[in-house]
Structure formats: structure tokens, C-alpha cells
Amino acid sequence: MTPGLQLEGLSKHFAGRAVIHQVSLQAREGELLTLVGPSGSGKSTLLRLISGLAEPDAGSIHVAGRDVGRLPPEQRDIAMVFQSYALFPHLTIADNLSFGMRARREPQAHIAARGTEVAEVLGLQPMLTRTPRQLSGGERQRVALGRAMLREPKLFLLDEPLSNLDAQLRVQTRAEILRLHGRLGTTMVYVTHDQVEALSLGQRVGVLRDGRLEDLGEPERIYRRPRTLFVARFVGSPPMNTVAVAAAPPDRVTWGSQSLPVPRLLAQHLGAAGRRLVLGVRPEHVQIQGSRWARGETSGQALAATVQSLEYAGDQVTLELLVQGASLLARVEPEYRALPGQGVTLCLDPEDLLLFDADSELALGAPEAGA
Image (cartoon, rainbow, N blue to C red):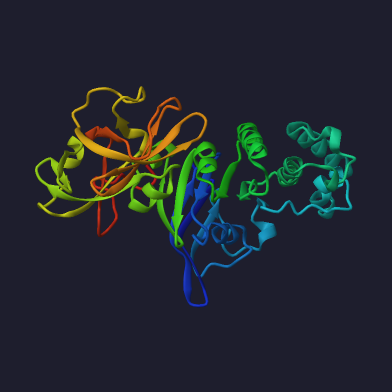
């Protein structure tokens, strides 16, 4: 099957600095691929290169099997939705939707039929005679999506389209985008700095850092088995706990005065005794004795900890713990009771642990990119 989008060795420099560095990836035909990363990681620049709004210094861009790298934006068969709605304030919603079609001098009957169809899909029929200032932020973003849909492109590019919306509207509009993608079946590349959006929307997720593609895979794999220490720390809220440890072959690591068993599949990758490693564990896998969220007896090592602080979030409480001189976060049920300074006992199941090389920052037994 021909990929919906294929990038090979894409690079871009500004003022002598690489902002996109040898990025290669594929979005499958009909896939919703999300790209996430911190500010300055190159997400929006990558979309500009794909759309033709910027020229790469090296590499190739194929959309639905066609090389578009040397084509102007209007010939690439790509529709882009920006963070700002970019609507004409003096035009009605109907005229905003159809502006591009009218500019291309398409037949009036076709414009009317397609405009009605798209308005129905997005629930915009009651608003067609209004102007943008009479709409909410979520409604304006739907208009921007509708205008892109009228292009019937081979590829949709969405550049942080929900960042101007409040929390409730973000959730609602995310659901609308998922329904829209399911209905259209068109390849979409969705850029965001919000990891919740990336994980909940994407059939696969790519993580960018300093213009490089750090990881690419299905959301569950990205969360549970990240390829690098950066991805492990960036994806997840609260973030993954990471502490410095040392290899103690054949199947353990040392953390301060403690010796911890490691997952069976990772033991073969430990290397020489004393090798510098970083241990990673998600807050939900830090099991607190007395919490009903703890899974009971495990083969892991019991550790003494001291509660530093508690953060109540309605459906859960996040504990900050001091363990072996390091800070760990743990999730417990909202009814759990503890006070700062109180001692607790925790347990880490070996199968929940990840290990990273401290120098390369690659996960031991790292999965293939794209897996």
C-alpha cells in the first residue's frame, strides 16, 4: 500500500543551525499520525516543509506516492489547518467555507452541494449566515476544518488547532476530529505540544526533540516502552520517575544501599557490573503498602519512603516520596490518607521497570522505531 506521506532524510537549517535533522517517517494511507514535542522541537517547521511553505535543504517528500518536494504549495494536494483560525471576519460562515472553491472558479452548483455536505458533517448548518465574531472558539475551529475539507486533499496537516480553546472545548473538538477522520478516511498529520492530545488522537505518535525524530510508534508502546530517556520523561503526566542506578549482573541493579531485581527480558542487556544506568518507573507502578491500588505481593524489593507532599486531583492523589535520597511520584486512590513526614513502604514490581543507558539514553532492549 502506498503511504499517505513519506519523508526521507528531510533537513532544514536556519542561520546555520539545524532545525530539522534527517527526519524520515511514513504516515500510512488513511492514518491519523500525531507529532508531539516541546517548544522548539521543529514540529511546525516540519509541517511547513511538507506543505511547501518552506523549502528543505535536503531530503524528499512524497504524498500518496507522488514526489511533491519541488512543487508549489497549491499543487501539492494538501490542506492545512493552523493554530489561528484565519477566517475572514467580514464574511459569513458560508462564504468562509467556500472561499477557496470560489477563488478556484469552481461551478456554483458544486460549491453549494459540497458546502452543504461539509456543514452537515460538522454541524455548522445553523451558523452559515453568521460571521466569525458570533461563534465560539470551538465553532470557529470547525469552520477552519470545514474549509480544509472542501479541498478534498490527499493529506491534512493540522498545526496545534486546539491550542486556543479552553479545556472543555478541547475535549469536545478532539472527539469531533476523531469522528471526522473516521468519516473521511484521509491521511492526517496532527502536530501538538499536548501529550494527552497526541496519545488520544494518534493511531501512531512521533516524538520530536531538537529537530530529530526520537521515537515513532503506537500510543501504548510509546507510553509503556519508550525508546529513549527523553521520550520516557516527556510522555506522561505526572512524568516517569527516573533514578541513577548501576548494573549488578546477572539480574539486578543497585540503587544506593538497595539491590533491585530487573525484568527477565532486560537482564541479558545489563552489561558489565557497575555500568551506569537510569531506572524508570511510572507513578502508577509505584505500589504503596496500604493503598487499595497496590497489586498485592510482588517479587519486587520493599523500600522505605517518606511522604514529602500530596497533590489532590479529584480522581487520584499524587504523592511525592523521598526514597534513597531521590524523589519519586506515586499515584494512589483519592481516599488514601497520609501526611507530610509520614513513613510509608513501597514496592516496585520488576516487570514494571525500564532501564536506560546513562550515556546514550537509549532504552535497554529498545524497540524498533515505528513499532
